[in-house]
Image (cartoon, rainbow over all chains, first blue to last red; front, side):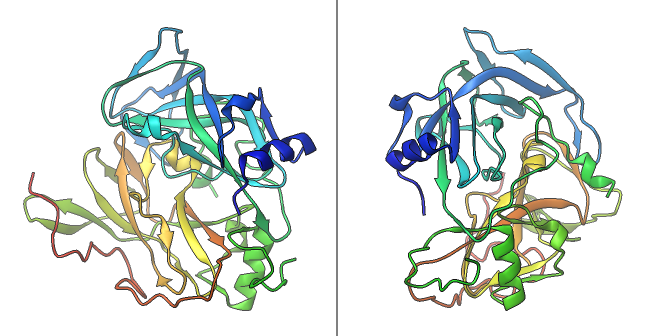
Length: 173
Length: 181
């Protein structure tokens, strides 16, 4: 079951989920609209490798925005710290953003339960598009869980967002 | 809670937790073969990339197999590839959603193209629609995506679609195909 906007507000009051900072104006019928942070990472090499550490450059997105280029991945933090110990968050783009051809994630929309962080967005555009720090960019939905809950304690825990891919750590197991 | 009756219990459209997935595998309500409990996440199961890879050939106007050695294969941007899950995955009881892993999404690899719903009753190696933003080297057998399982509402309708018991990557069965470039 998906939480309604009022259930999200209630669950936040009860401490079952975190959204900080929180603006009641950003509550939707079944989601909360979150904003884009200003820290961005891009990969230094144009050719990437899932078994290797891919070096990144980090920079701050200026107030007057950044034009994204197709064929490049931009990792940017969410402005809000979000997460839940009771519900599973699933993130979506906002339709206003999708209509501009901007992906905010790349087929990985499920946030592990217990992962309370600024999340890392995987920005990718179809056509060049200018983005601004603090803009409303995506929405988070919260889903009820069937079965006993165990929390995430993986390789992205407690790292300041955005975090580049750590897929290479899997290659050694 | 893992064993509570699902129909009429009010627990519809909930996502299964790790312990509920494990209980469903034990009960035969979820099939994952080969199954490794280490691949369970809090609300999903990590699947691996199978050893076969197809690439769309504009010249031949069809998907053609490409060599996919242990040293990997470099996916190019603006091309479409089909891979498959290494595991046979399915469920007679739950709906399934296929998604990427964040480690892979952070490298710009799509594992499907808008079609993420696995029908209740289907079982097979799932075809993955692979597309990259930047060129990316991938390897057979690597962790590449996850599947989540969802409690459904209503009487289960056994899926009898065209892709049941798939083995390896299967091109679209639409009788039209991709345009020549």
